[in-house]
Image (cartoon, rainbow, N blue to C red; front, top):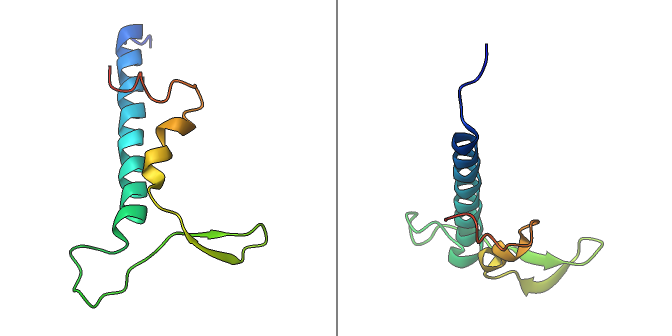
Amino acid sequence: MESHVSSTSRDDLAQLARASAYEAVFGLLYRLTAYGRDNEAPDDSPGWRLMETTAVGELTGRAVLSLHEDLLSMDPSGHEGQDLFE
């Protein structure tokens, strides 16, 4: 059976998938590094912190902050996500 999806439709679907993936990863990274806890949990609930380690896995004592801000700079195309939301 021959597909009747035009190349424009495929391009649109691919862009939607990429934008959705970006939004999901951005949200996860933001939540991991910006909050440090579940805002809906009771105040005495434990939190979390993403920590830097050495090459052998020992903690350096430095927290990894604002990782979400670096996401677009990691775009393998080199476009820094400029084409995601056109």
